[in-house]
Length: 367
Ligand code: DCP
Ligand code: CA
Ligand code: CA
Image (cartoon, rainbow, N blue to C red; front, side):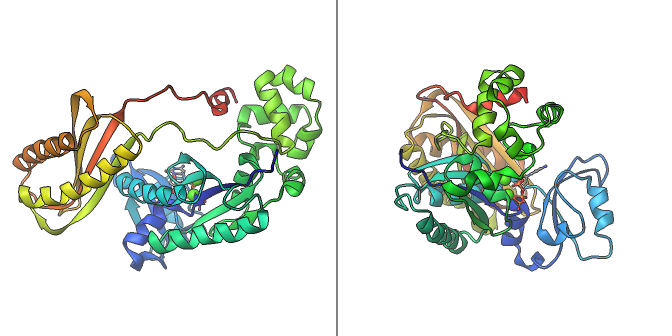
């Protein structure tokens, strides 16, 4: 079998980078994006932060009050998460990725595997230029930077990507893959959680190299057949999992800013018609039927709301989206007098053509 060339792209400090994109004046300051739980002004947790804030020890998961304390005396900027906005940016980048790869597997809002074997004719030399080309294209079109790992399979690509951030590009050729993994702690491997890692320590396995040398039969006895074989192979940099689409998207949406803030239905519908056109094009491309139509609204005071309608029957039809968007806006405008700044159209609850394929990741629950 010809060696595959697999890329993992992971967007840099993603939520915070999106916020910098929307407001470049905050770029040189510590930026923290968090989920405010609402109980007190400062309760909640940090979702992520830019690299300036990270220098002060502010990272994902820590309490917001602690982040505030660490950044005391700086010109820090704290912002609430805006998932619709990040999803929209993520979708745009994923669409660009798709044009560069034979297959694309999106694993989260800010991460995707690309199989580019054909595009670079199996060459890891060409892969370097190719990755740089994709980075430049996304930077130009969207304005977001990301890190890339290139390897002969998904496991190696992922770890390669993690090894150099932000704006990294790390290439691990097939012949280097085993040595590249050897010195890492086992818990760097996907599927080695806390419990598994404790068990491995008991077995005297600390590094991926230890795991690679460990008797495979023993691994199967301890972790079961599926995971035992997976661990043995992964540690030896063997991974034949294909890069494959994770079923269909959960939803397809577009958001846009109105030319001026307004409360006028027809003015708003002009904009949503454009958005509906784009949503419909993607629905058609992917040959999907949807059962839910939703609108998203950002008002002048920056508060955001969404409303949805569930259809009786799955539909593939543009007119159905338009009609329901109109109904939703008529109702929404009659309930709220605030002017509207941004609007979005979303369809979701897709009928699947076939059931999702069982993924190896389904087994990771046991870790
Ligand atoms: N995220 C979150 N809560 C966490 C971890 C992550 O809400 N505990 C969100 C915010 C991140 C996004 O997921 O921007 C992607 O997570 P990553 O782990 O990839 O981290 P970042 O993209 O923020 O930073 P990095 O540059 O290290 O990839
Ligand atoms: Ca990231
Ligand atoms: Ca990520």
